[in-house]
Image 1: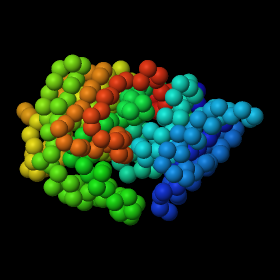
Image 2: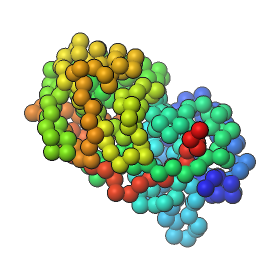
Image 3: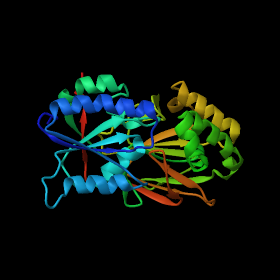
Amino acid sequence: MGISERRIKIIHNPVAGGSKRKRLAIALRALKKHAKKVKVSPTKYAGHGVKRADKALNRKKKKPYDIVCAAGGDGTIAEVANGMRGSDNPLLVLPLGTANVFAREIGLGTNMRKIAAMVETLKVKTVYPGIINERRFIMMVGVGIDSLAVAALDSKLKRQIGAAAYIIAAFKAVKRMQDLDLLVTVDGDEYQASQVVVTLGRLYGGPFVISPNASLEDKNFHVILMKKKGFWAAMKYGIALATGRLPYLKDVIITSAQHVKIDSPNSLPIQADGDLAGMVPVELSLDEHPLQVLAPTAK
């Protein structure tokens, strides 16, 4: 199923600068060239993407849209994916976020001109989201320095300087690193760790490989457990991630699972797809409903 003669509803996160609006315009020109109808609906508040997507697929008086498009970052994509739960209609992604992990993971990339050139050739791919607190997540859940940084993130600064805002937030979170005592239960087996990332795909934070054998098309989580605690350990893990060595460190365990529970004696935040998702304890499971997404064909 391509986009030719299809009706497309684009759900757009408008919290973006002029450059991102220009990137969206590039994609819109390509979509309007091929599709039967293209309608853009901006989100107005957190969680609005869920309602927008549900309404696009379940219109009572008008014909539902054939394709729902998420134009934004991973958080926007996750919202739209939640509104599409249970539907076989495909999701189209226009990456306008900071890290754009999901778009990279499905092979779409982040170059909007290249995406615009290939929109008519995209094919449906079946991927498997996870469930956290009765909601879908599309890429990963983390508890550790990443979730502390997300909790400390200045959203206004993020809009101004992008990914660098996460680095500043991570340094703000240093004082809480000693609280990172986790008990992680992976399909019944217990592990102690200072940080954990439960991922559905290979990538993390953009182009960085965190679990080489993971795939969105597999019905499994990959659980990355980092055992050592403290500032220097966090620095080591960060550098290892950036250089592709994290999965091979001796104090890092990677295992697969279908059910994960994360607990701690301390009050710690959780991040899911780069957004705050509550506090520990938390249980993660695989979604029984797959997600259909438009992606480039494998070469």
